Image (cartoon, rainbow, N blue to C red; front, side):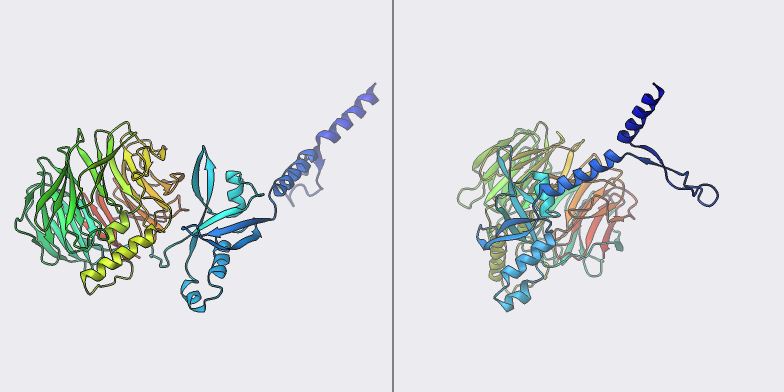
Length: 547
Protein backbone atom coordinates (compact mmCIF):
# COMPACT_ATOMS: atom_id res chain seq x y z
CA UNK A 1 0.00 0.00 0.00
CA UNK A 2 2.86 2.34 0.90
CA UNK A 3 4.64 1.55 -2.37
CA UNK A 4 1.51 2.42 -4.36
CA UNK A 5 1.20 5.75 -2.57
CA UNK A 6 4.85 6.57 -3.22
CA UNK A 7 4.56 5.74 -6.91
CA UNK A 8 1.44 7.87 -7.35
CA UNK A 9 3.15 10.82 -5.56
CA UNK A 10 6.18 10.58 -7.82
CA UNK A 11 3.92 10.55 -10.91
CA UNK A 12 2.03 13.58 -9.56
CA UNK A 13 5.31 15.45 -8.99
CA UNK A 14 6.43 14.77 -12.53
CA UNK A 15 3.26 16.34 -13.91
CA UNK A 16 3.12 19.35 -11.64
CA UNK A 17 6.82 20.21 -11.57
CA UNK A 18 8.12 21.12 -8.15
CA UNK A 19 11.34 22.00 -6.38
CA UNK A 20 14.66 20.87 -7.89
CA UNK A 21 18.21 21.01 -6.52
CA UNK A 22 20.16 23.70 -8.35
CA UNK A 23 23.74 23.13 -7.30
CA UNK A 24 25.89 23.20 -4.21
CA UNK A 25 27.04 26.84 -4.16
CA UNK A 26 25.32 27.64 -0.89
CA UNK A 27 26.62 29.66 2.00
CA UNK A 28 29.38 32.22 2.33
CA UNK A 29 30.65 31.98 -1.26
CA UNK A 30 27.19 32.60 -2.79
CA UNK A 31 24.74 33.77 -0.08
CA UNK A 32 21.95 34.67 -2.57
CA UNK A 33 21.69 31.11 -3.88
CA UNK A 34 19.79 28.90 -1.45
CA UNK A 35 20.37 25.86 -3.61
CA UNK A 36 16.84 25.45 -4.96
CA UNK A 37 14.98 26.58 -8.06
CA UNK A 38 11.29 26.22 -8.83
CA UNK A 39 10.48 24.14 -11.87
CA UNK A 40 7.01 24.20 -13.42
CA UNK A 41 7.82 22.54 -16.69
CA UNK A 42 4.34 22.37 -18.20
CA UNK A 43 3.79 26.14 -17.62
CA UNK A 44 7.13 26.96 -19.16
CA UNK A 45 6.39 24.93 -22.28
CA UNK A 46 2.89 26.36 -22.53
CA UNK A 47 4.18 29.94 -22.43
CA UNK A 48 6.64 29.39 -25.25
CA UNK A 49 3.96 27.74 -27.39
CA UNK A 50 1.69 30.75 -26.79
CA UNK A 51 4.42 33.07 -28.05
CA UNK A 52 4.82 30.93 -31.15
CA UNK A 53 1.10 31.10 -31.83
CA UNK A 54 1.13 34.92 -31.57
CA UNK A 55 3.99 35.11 -34.03
CA UNK A 56 2.12 32.79 -36.38
CA UNK A 57 -0.99 34.96 -36.23
CA UNK A 58 0.53 37.59 -38.57
CA UNK A 59 2.21 36.81 -41.88
CA UNK A 60 5.75 38.08 -42.37
CA UNK A 61 4.70 40.27 -45.33
CA UNK A 62 1.71 42.41 -46.22
CA UNK A 63 0.39 43.99 -49.44
CA UNK A 64 -0.08 47.79 -49.22
CA UNK A 65 -1.14 50.55 -51.60
CA UNK A 66 0.03 54.15 -51.05
CA UNK A 67 -2.20 57.06 -52.03
CA UNK A 68 -2.15 60.80 -51.41
CA UNK A 69 -4.87 62.88 -49.75
CA UNK A 70 -6.62 63.40 -53.11
CA UNK A 71 -6.92 59.63 -53.51
CA UNK A 72 -4.35 59.31 -56.34
CA UNK A 73 -2.45 56.03 -56.13
CA UNK A 74 1.35 55.93 -55.97
CA UNK A 75 2.95 52.97 -57.79
CA UNK A 76 1.27 49.57 -57.79
CA UNK A 77 0.59 47.17 -54.93
CA UNK A 78 3.69 46.55 -52.82
CA UNK A 79 4.60 43.53 -50.73
CA UNK A 80 6.40 44.81 -47.60
CA UNK A 81 7.35 43.37 -44.16
CA UNK A 82 4.57 43.45 -41.55
CA UNK A 83 6.99 44.89 -39.01
CA UNK A 84 7.65 48.04 -41.10
CA UNK A 85 7.80 51.21 -39.00
CA UNK A 86 6.77 54.75 -39.95
CA UNK A 87 10.41 55.52 -40.84
CA UNK A 88 10.55 52.46 -43.12
CA UNK A 89 7.32 53.52 -44.84
CA UNK A 90 8.66 57.08 -45.29
CA UNK A 91 11.91 55.80 -46.85
CA UNK A 92 9.95 53.57 -49.23
CA UNK A 93 7.59 56.39 -50.19
CA UNK A 94 10.54 58.75 -50.87
CA UNK A 95 12.07 56.20 -53.23
CA UNK A 96 8.74 55.84 -55.08
CA UNK A 97 8.00 59.57 -55.35
CA UNK A 98 11.52 60.70 -56.25
CA UNK A 99 12.58 57.86 -58.48
CA UNK A 100 12.79 59.75 -61.75
CA UNK A 101 13.29 63.40 -60.92
CA UNK A 102 16.73 64.17 -59.44
CA UNK A 103 15.90 67.85 -58.80
CA UNK A 104 12.80 66.96 -56.85
CA UNK A 105 14.77 64.32 -55.03
CA UNK A 106 17.10 66.93 -53.57
CA UNK A 107 14.15 69.07 -52.49
CA UNK A 108 11.85 66.38 -51.16
CA UNK A 109 14.09 63.75 -49.61
CA UNK A 110 13.87 65.36 -46.18
CA UNK A 111 10.07 65.69 -46.08
CA UNK A 112 8.66 63.53 -43.24
CA UNK A 113 5.29 61.81 -43.71
CA UNK A 114 2.48 60.48 -41.57
CA UNK A 115 0.39 57.50 -42.69
CA UNK A 116 -3.29 56.73 -42.16
CA UNK A 117 -5.65 53.90 -42.97
CA UNK A 118 -9.43 53.80 -42.84
CA UNK A 119 -10.94 51.55 -40.17
CA UNK A 120 -14.66 50.78 -39.89
CA UNK A 121 -15.88 51.13 -36.30
CA UNK A 122 -19.52 51.20 -35.19
CA UNK A 123 -20.55 51.71 -38.80
CA UNK A 124 -18.34 54.81 -39.20
CA UNK A 125 -15.08 55.00 -41.15
CA UNK A 126 -12.26 56.61 -39.12
CA UNK A 127 -8.78 57.64 -40.23
CA UNK A 128 -6.32 55.82 -37.95
CA UNK A 129 -2.69 56.95 -37.89
CA UNK A 130 0.19 54.47 -38.03
CA UNK A 131 2.16 55.41 -34.90
CA UNK A 132 4.65 52.54 -34.56
CA UNK A 133 4.57 49.51 -36.91
CA UNK A 134 2.04 47.98 -39.30
CA UNK A 135 1.97 44.85 -37.09
CA UNK A 136 0.84 46.92 -34.09
CA UNK A 137 -1.83 48.64 -36.22
CA UNK A 138 -3.18 45.31 -37.46
CA UNK A 139 -3.27 43.77 -33.96
CA UNK A 140 -4.83 46.81 -32.30
CA UNK A 141 -7.64 47.26 -34.83
CA UNK A 142 -7.96 43.59 -35.90
CA UNK A 143 -7.39 44.37 -39.58
CA UNK A 144 -7.42 41.63 -42.21
CA UNK A 145 -4.04 40.66 -43.69
CA UNK A 146 -5.80 38.98 -46.64
CA UNK A 147 -6.80 42.31 -48.18
CA UNK A 148 -4.63 45.13 -49.51
CA UNK A 149 -3.96 47.74 -46.80
CA UNK A 150 -4.71 51.23 -48.18
CA UNK A 151 -2.28 53.78 -46.69
CA UNK A 152 -2.92 57.49 -47.17
CA UNK A 153 0.19 59.63 -46.69
CA UNK A 154 0.34 63.25 -45.56
CA UNK A 155 3.48 65.41 -45.65
CA UNK A 156 4.49 66.95 -42.33
CA UNK A 157 6.32 70.23 -41.73
CA UNK A 158 9.74 70.25 -43.39
CA UNK A 159 11.14 72.67 -40.83
CA UNK A 160 11.60 71.89 -37.14
CA UNK A 161 10.85 74.27 -34.31
CA UNK A 162 13.38 74.02 -31.50
CA UNK A 163 11.84 73.29 -28.09
CA UNK A 164 11.78 76.24 -25.68
CA UNK A 165 13.78 75.52 -22.54
CA UNK A 166 14.83 78.77 -20.83
CA UNK A 167 13.51 82.20 -19.94
CA UNK A 168 15.44 84.86 -21.85
CA UNK A 169 13.48 87.96 -20.78
CA UNK A 170 11.06 89.13 -18.12
CA UNK A 171 9.06 92.19 -19.18
CA UNK A 172 7.42 94.26 -16.42
CA UNK A 173 5.13 97.21 -17.13
CA UNK A 174 1.53 96.14 -16.58
CA UNK A 175 0.15 97.11 -13.18
CA UNK A 176 -2.54 94.41 -13.03
CA UNK A 177 -2.90 90.78 -14.14
CA UNK A 178 -2.10 90.10 -17.80
CA UNK A 179 -5.04 88.40 -19.50
CA UNK A 180 -3.78 88.22 -23.11
CA UNK A 181 -0.50 87.96 -24.98
CA UNK A 182 -0.40 87.41 -28.75
CA UNK A 183 2.19 87.53 -31.50
CA UNK A 184 1.39 89.18 -34.82
CA UNK A 185 0.90 86.76 -37.78
CA UNK A 186 4.42 87.50 -39.06
CA UNK A 187 5.92 87.10 -35.56
CA UNK A 188 7.45 90.60 -35.61
CA UNK A 189 5.24 92.18 -32.92
CA UNK A 190 3.97 91.11 -29.51
CA UNK A 191 0.89 92.66 -27.91
CA UNK A 192 -0.57 92.28 -24.42
CA UNK A 193 -3.66 93.42 -22.55
CA UNK A 194 -4.98 93.01 -19.03
CA UNK A 195 -6.65 94.31 -15.92
CA UNK A 196 -4.84 97.67 -15.93
CA UNK A 197 -6.97 98.80 -18.98
CA UNK A 198 -3.90 99.31 -21.21
CA UNK A 199 -2.77 97.61 -24.42
CA UNK A 200 1.00 97.32 -24.79
CA UNK A 201 3.12 96.58 -27.86
CA UNK A 202 6.58 95.08 -27.34
CA UNK A 203 9.68 94.84 -29.52
CA UNK A 204 10.20 91.12 -30.18
CA UNK A 205 13.95 91.43 -30.83
CA UNK A 206 14.92 93.50 -27.77
CA UNK A 207 11.98 92.58 -25.49
CA UNK A 208 11.52 96.27 -24.68
CA UNK A 209 8.22 98.21 -24.67
CA UNK A 210 7.35 100.05 -27.90
CA UNK A 211 3.94 101.59 -27.20
CA UNK A 212 1.61 101.81 -24.21
CA UNK A 213 -1.93 102.47 -25.47
CA UNK A 214 -4.56 104.14 -23.29
CA UNK A 215 -8.24 104.33 -24.19
CA UNK A 216 -10.06 101.54 -22.40
CA UNK A 217 -11.83 102.31 -19.13
CA UNK A 218 -12.12 98.72 -17.92
CA UNK A 219 -10.35 95.32 -18.08
CA UNK A 220 -9.12 94.44 -21.60
CA UNK A 221 -10.85 91.06 -22.01
CA UNK A 222 -9.94 90.01 -25.55
CA UNK A 223 -7.57 90.97 -28.34
CA UNK A 224 -6.93 89.85 -31.95
CA UNK A 225 -4.51 90.60 -34.80
CA UNK A 226 -5.74 91.04 -38.37
CA UNK A 227 -4.31 88.27 -40.65
CA UNK A 228 -2.11 90.79 -42.51
CA UNK A 229 -0.69 92.13 -39.23
CA UNK A 230 -1.62 95.75 -40.00
CA UNK A 231 -4.36 96.16 -37.35
CA UNK A 232 -4.87 95.08 -33.76
CA UNK A 233 -8.32 94.97 -32.13
CA UNK A 234 -8.91 95.06 -28.38
CA UNK A 235 -12.15 95.10 -26.40
CA UNK A 236 -13.07 95.57 -22.77
CA UNK A 237 -15.58 94.84 -20.02
CA UNK A 238 -17.65 97.93 -20.94
CA UNK A 239 -18.37 96.64 -24.46
CA UNK A 240 -15.94 99.11 -26.10
CA UNK A 241 -13.70 98.05 -29.01
CA UNK A 242 -10.59 99.96 -30.15
CA UNK A 243 -8.54 99.35 -33.33
CA UNK A 244 -4.83 100.12 -33.01
CA UNK A 245 -2.04 100.73 -35.49
CA UNK A 246 0.78 98.50 -34.13
CA UNK A 247 3.52 100.63 -35.73
CA UNK A 248 2.43 103.92 -34.09
CA UNK A 249 0.42 102.71 -31.09
CA UNK A 250 -2.41 105.13 -32.02
CA UNK A 251 -6.11 104.30 -32.58
CA UNK A 252 -7.12 103.87 -36.24
CA UNK A 253 -10.11 105.31 -38.11
CA UNK A 254 -12.41 108.24 -37.42
CA UNK A 255 -13.57 107.27 -33.94
CA UNK A 256 -10.94 106.32 -31.43
CA UNK A 257 -13.35 104.06 -29.49
CA UNK A 258 -16.32 102.08 -30.74
CA UNK A 259 -19.23 101.25 -28.46
CA UNK A 260 -19.73 97.78 -29.92
CA UNK A 261 -22.02 96.05 -27.39
CA UNK A 262 -24.18 96.82 -24.36
CA UNK A 263 -22.30 94.36 -22.18
CA UNK A 264 -18.74 93.08 -22.16
CA UNK A 265 -17.18 91.59 -25.29
CA UNK A 266 -16.13 87.96 -24.89
CA UNK A 267 -14.40 87.19 -28.20
CA UNK A 268 -13.09 88.73 -31.45
CA UNK A 269 -12.36 86.96 -34.74
CA UNK A 270 -11.10 88.42 -38.05
CA UNK A 271 -12.14 87.38 -41.55
CA UNK A 272 -9.36 85.22 -43.08
CA UNK A 273 -7.14 86.91 -45.67
CA UNK A 274 -7.75 84.27 -48.35
CA UNK A 275 -11.43 85.31 -48.29
CA UNK A 276 -10.83 89.07 -48.40
CA UNK A 277 -7.54 90.74 -49.37
CA UNK A 278 -8.34 93.97 -47.52
CA UNK A 279 -8.68 92.27 -44.06
CA UNK A 280 -11.25 94.84 -42.96
CA UNK A 281 -14.03 92.73 -41.44
CA UNK A 282 -14.24 91.16 -38.00
CA UNK A 283 -16.91 89.68 -35.75
CA UNK A 284 -17.40 90.30 -32.02
CA UNK A 285 -19.39 88.25 -29.49
CA UNK A 286 -20.82 89.59 -26.24
CA UNK A 287 -22.43 88.79 -22.94
CA UNK A 288 -25.54 90.58 -24.30
CA UNK A 289 -26.33 87.46 -26.39
CA UNK A 290 -25.52 88.96 -29.80
CA UNK A 291 -22.64 88.91 -32.26
CA UNK A 292 -21.84 91.76 -34.65
CA UNK A 293 -19.95 91.83 -37.93
CA UNK A 294 -17.98 95.07 -38.40
CA UNK A 295 -16.23 96.82 -41.26
CA UNK A 296 -13.24 98.33 -39.45
CA UNK A 297 -12.42 100.75 -42.28
CA UNK A 298 -15.82 102.46 -42.15
CA UNK A 299 -16.37 101.46 -38.47
CA UNK A 300 -19.92 100.41 -39.36
CA UNK A 301 -21.83 97.35 -38.13
CA UNK A 302 -22.67 95.25 -41.22
CA UNK A 303 -24.86 92.66 -39.50
CA UNK A 304 -26.09 91.64 -36.06
CA UNK A 305 -26.30 87.89 -35.40
CA UNK A 306 -29.18 87.50 -32.94
CA UNK A 307 -30.79 84.26 -31.80
CA UNK A 308 -28.84 83.02 -28.80
CA UNK A 309 -30.79 83.24 -25.55
CA UNK A 310 -27.76 83.74 -23.28
CA UNK A 311 -24.22 85.12 -23.32
CA UNK A 312 -22.16 84.23 -26.41
CA UNK A 313 -18.83 82.92 -25.07
CA UNK A 314 -16.83 82.35 -28.27
CA UNK A 315 -16.94 83.25 -31.97
CA UNK A 316 -14.84 81.89 -34.86
CA UNK A 317 -14.67 83.07 -38.48
CA UNK A 318 -13.96 79.91 -40.49
CA UNK A 319 -12.06 79.38 -43.71
CA UNK A 320 -15.12 78.22 -45.66
CA UNK A 321 -17.18 81.42 -45.44
CA UNK A 322 -19.02 80.57 -42.23
CA UNK A 323 -19.12 82.12 -38.74
CA UNK A 324 -19.51 79.88 -35.67
CA UNK A 325 -20.87 81.16 -32.35
CA UNK A 326 -20.99 79.23 -29.05
CA UNK A 327 -23.20 80.28 -26.16
CA UNK A 328 -24.17 79.63 -22.57
CA UNK A 329 -27.55 78.50 -23.98
CA UNK A 330 -25.78 75.17 -24.84
CA UNK A 331 -25.98 75.64 -28.62
CA UNK A 332 -23.58 76.47 -31.45
CA UNK A 333 -24.98 78.47 -34.35
CA UNK A 334 -23.54 78.50 -37.85
CA UNK A 335 -23.98 81.70 -39.93
CA UNK A 336 -23.11 82.69 -43.48
CA UNK A 337 -20.31 85.24 -43.89
CA UNK A 338 -20.44 85.86 -47.65
CA UNK A 339 -20.42 89.56 -48.54
CA UNK A 340 -23.92 89.62 -50.03
CA UNK A 341 -25.50 87.34 -47.46
CA UNK A 342 -23.93 88.05 -44.07
CA UNK A 343 -25.66 86.85 -40.92
CA UNK A 344 -28.08 84.27 -42.32
CA UNK A 345 -28.50 81.31 -39.95
CA UNK A 346 -27.44 78.05 -41.63
CA UNK A 347 -27.90 75.50 -38.82
CA UNK A 348 -27.90 75.08 -35.06
CA UNK A 349 -25.67 72.45 -33.46
CA UNK A 350 -27.07 70.88 -30.28
CA UNK A 351 -25.65 68.23 -27.96
CA UNK A 352 -23.96 69.84 -24.96
CA UNK A 353 -25.69 69.65 -21.59
CA UNK A 354 -24.10 72.80 -20.15
CA UNK A 355 -22.65 76.14 -21.26
CA UNK A 356 -20.11 76.03 -24.09
CA UNK A 357 -16.81 77.73 -23.22
CA UNK A 358 -14.59 77.37 -26.25
CA UNK A 359 -14.41 76.50 -29.95
CA UNK A 360 -11.51 75.42 -32.17
CA UNK A 361 -11.35 75.02 -35.97
CA UNK A 362 -8.99 72.78 -37.93
CA UNK A 363 -8.18 75.87 -40.05
CA UNK A 364 -7.50 78.21 -37.09
CA UNK A 365 -3.76 78.50 -37.67
CA UNK A 366 -4.10 79.11 -41.42
CA UNK A 367 -6.77 81.77 -40.84
CA UNK A 368 -4.67 83.43 -38.14
CA UNK A 369 -1.34 83.61 -40.00
CA UNK A 370 -2.67 84.51 -43.46
CA UNK A 371 0.20 84.59 -46.00
CA UNK A 372 3.01 84.29 -43.41
CA UNK A 373 4.95 81.17 -42.44
CA UNK A 374 8.17 80.14 -40.68
CA UNK A 375 10.32 81.81 -43.38
CA UNK A 376 9.22 85.35 -42.31
CA UNK A 377 8.71 86.39 -45.94
CA UNK A 378 8.09 90.08 -46.65
CA UNK A 379 5.63 90.86 -49.44
CA UNK A 380 6.05 93.74 -51.87
CA UNK A 381 2.33 94.43 -52.20
CA UNK A 382 -1.02 93.46 -50.70
CA UNK A 383 -1.84 91.59 -53.90
CA UNK A 384 1.23 89.35 -53.48
CA UNK A 385 0.29 88.69 -49.87
CA UNK A 386 -3.29 87.86 -50.88
CA UNK A 387 -2.11 85.38 -53.54
CA UNK A 388 0.21 83.74 -51.01
CA UNK A 389 -2.66 83.44 -48.51
CA UNK A 390 -4.95 81.85 -51.13
CA UNK A 391 -2.26 79.37 -52.22
CA UNK A 392 -1.46 78.48 -48.60
CA UNK A 393 -5.13 77.82 -47.81
CA UNK A 394 -5.68 75.75 -50.97
CA UNK A 395 -2.65 73.64 -50.15
CA UNK A 396 -3.94 73.10 -46.60
CA UNK A 397 -7.44 72.27 -47.83
CA UNK A 398 -6.32 69.83 -50.55
CA UNK A 399 -7.92 66.53 -49.71
CA UNK A 400 -11.35 65.23 -48.87
CA UNK A 401 -11.52 66.40 -45.24
CA UNK A 402 -14.10 69.12 -44.56
CA UNK A 403 -13.50 71.91 -42.03
CA UNK A 404 -13.73 70.44 -38.53
CA UNK A 405 -15.01 72.16 -35.41
CA UNK A 406 -14.49 71.09 -31.78
CA UNK A 407 -16.47 72.54 -28.88
CA UNK A 408 -15.66 72.30 -25.16
CA UNK A 409 -18.15 72.72 -22.35
CA UNK A 410 -18.85 72.87 -18.63
CA UNK A 411 -20.44 69.42 -19.02
CA UNK A 412 -16.81 68.04 -19.08
CA UNK A 413 -17.16 66.83 -22.70
CA UNK A 414 -16.05 67.86 -26.18
CA UNK A 415 -17.95 67.41 -29.44
CA UNK A 416 -16.40 67.01 -32.90
CA UNK A 417 -18.48 68.45 -35.77
CA UNK A 418 -18.42 68.82 -39.55
CA UNK A 419 -20.51 72.01 -39.32
CA UNK A 420 -20.63 72.77 -43.06
CA UNK A 421 -22.22 69.39 -43.80
CA UNK A 422 -24.32 68.32 -40.83
CA UNK A 423 -25.95 69.49 -37.63
CA UNK A 424 -25.16 66.14 -35.96
CA UNK A 425 -21.86 65.63 -34.11
CA UNK A 426 -19.29 63.19 -35.47
CA UNK A 427 -18.26 62.16 -31.98
CA UNK A 428 -18.75 62.93 -28.30
CA UNK A 429 -15.42 62.96 -26.48
CA UNK A 430 -15.39 62.13 -22.77
CA UNK A 431 -12.58 61.82 -20.26
CA UNK A 432 -12.15 65.19 -18.56
CA UNK A 433 -13.41 65.31 -14.98
CA UNK A 434 -14.03 69.06 -14.80
CA UNK A 435 -14.99 71.89 -17.17
CA UNK A 436 -13.10 72.14 -20.47
CA UNK A 437 -11.41 75.53 -20.57
CA UNK A 438 -9.60 75.81 -23.91
CA UNK A 439 -9.08 73.79 -27.12
CA UNK A 440 -6.47 74.24 -29.85
CA UNK A 441 -5.95 72.39 -33.15
CA UNK A 442 -2.39 71.66 -34.25
CA UNK A 443 -1.42 73.75 -37.32
CA UNK A 444 -1.47 70.68 -39.60
CA UNK A 445 -4.90 69.59 -38.28
CA UNK A 446 -3.70 66.13 -37.20
CA UNK A 447 -4.36 66.63 -33.47
CA UNK A 448 -6.18 68.88 -31.08
CA UNK A 449 -5.46 69.51 -27.41
CA UNK A 450 -7.99 70.27 -24.68
CA UNK A 451 -7.17 72.00 -21.39
CA UNK A 452 -9.34 71.57 -18.33
CA UNK A 453 -9.80 72.58 -14.70
CA UNK A 454 -9.07 68.94 -13.82
CA UNK A 455 -5.30 69.82 -14.19
CA UNK A 456 -4.98 67.65 -17.31
CA UNK A 457 -4.34 68.25 -20.99
CA UNK A 458 -5.72 65.63 -23.36
CA UNK A 459 -4.59 64.98 -26.94
CA UNK A 460 -7.10 63.75 -29.53
CA UNK A 461 -6.95 62.63 -33.17
CA UNK A 462 -7.91 65.69 -35.23
CA UNK A 463 -9.78 63.67 -37.87
CA UNK A 464 -11.59 60.90 -36.01
CA UNK A 465 -11.71 62.41 -32.50
CA UNK A 466 -10.03 59.31 -31.01
CA UNK A 467 -8.35 59.78 -27.66
CA UNK A 468 -4.54 59.62 -27.89
CA UNK A 469 -2.97 60.65 -24.58
CA UNK A 470 -3.43 62.43 -21.26
CA UNK A 471 -0.67 64.86 -20.30
CA UNK A 472 -0.32 64.89 -16.52
CA UNK A 473 2.04 67.06 -14.53
CA UNK A 474 0.29 70.31 -13.69
CA UNK A 475 -0.89 70.64 -10.09
CA UNK A 476 -3.41 73.40 -10.84
CA UNK A 477 -6.12 74.09 -13.43
CA UNK A 478 -4.80 74.37 -17.01
CA UNK A 479 -5.93 77.65 -18.57
CA UNK A 480 -4.54 77.62 -22.10
CA UNK A 481 -2.53 75.58 -24.63
CA UNK A 482 -0.55 76.60 -27.74
CA UNK A 483 1.09 74.54 -30.51
CA UNK A 484 4.43 75.10 -32.21
CA UNK A 485 4.10 75.91 -35.93
CA UNK A 486 5.51 72.49 -36.92
CA UNK A 487 2.90 70.68 -34.74
CA UNK A 488 5.63 68.75 -32.88
CA UNK A 489 5.39 70.55 -29.52
CA UNK A 490 2.65 71.80 -27.24
CA UNK A 491 2.97 74.29 -24.38
CA UNK A 492 0.40 74.68 -21.58
CA UNK A 493 -0.22 77.45 -19.01
CA UNK A 494 -1.58 76.71 -15.56
CA UNK A 495 -2.84 78.04 -12.28
CA UNK A 496 0.21 76.40 -10.66
CA UNK A 497 2.40 79.34 -11.89
CA UNK A 498 4.24 77.24 -14.49
CA UNK A 499 4.08 76.50 -18.17
CA UNK A 500 5.02 73.05 -19.45
CA UNK A 501 6.39 71.86 -22.78
CA UNK A 502 5.21 68.53 -24.21
CA UNK A 503 6.50 66.58 -27.20
CA UNK A 504 3.82 65.29 -29.57
CA UNK A 505 2.25 62.82 -29.88
CA UNK A 506 4.36 60.53 -27.72
CA UNK A 507 5.16 62.57 -24.62
CA UNK A 508 2.81 61.88 -21.73
CA UNK A 509 5.39 63.38 -19.39
CA UNK A 510 6.44 67.02 -19.76
CA UNK A 511 9.69 67.47 -21.65
CA UNK A 512 10.36 70.79 -19.90
CA UNK A 513 8.80 72.73 -17.03
CA UNK A 514 9.04 76.50 -17.45
CA UNK A 515 9.00 77.99 -13.94
CA UNK A 516 9.58 81.58 -12.86
CA UNK A 517 6.21 83.29 -12.60
CA UNK A 518 5.14 84.24 -9.08
CA UNK A 519 1.43 83.62 -9.69
CA UNK A 520 -1.09 82.00 -12.03
CA UNK A 521 -0.22 81.96 -15.76
CA UNK A 522 -3.30 83.24 -17.60
CA UNK A 523 -1.97 83.99 -21.10
CA UNK A 524 0.14 82.08 -23.57
CA UNK A 525 1.22 82.24 -27.22
CA UNK A 526 3.82 80.57 -29.44
CA UNK A 527 5.24 82.80 -32.16
CA UNK A 528 4.03 81.75 -35.66
CA UNK A 529 7.64 81.65 -36.86
CA UNK A 530 8.48 79.26 -34.00
CA UNK A 531 11.21 81.37 -32.41
CA UNK A 532 9.76 82.00 -28.94
CA UNK A 533 6.92 81.50 -26.47
CA UNK A 534 5.36 84.35 -24.45
CA UNK A 535 3.56 83.82 -21.14
CA UNK A 536 1.54 86.42 -19.22
CA UNK A 537 0.73 86.08 -15.55
CA UNK A 538 -1.25 87.38 -12.63
CA UNK A 539 2.14 88.52 -11.28
CA UNK A 540 1.96 91.40 -13.84
CA UNK A 541 4.96 90.27 -15.93
CA UNK A 542 5.45 88.73 -19.36
CA UNK A 543 8.19 86.14 -19.82
CA UNK A 544 9.81 85.17 -23.12
CA UNK A 545 11.02 81.59 -23.53
CA UNK A 546 13.47 80.38 -26.18
CA UNK A 547 15.60 77.34 -27.03
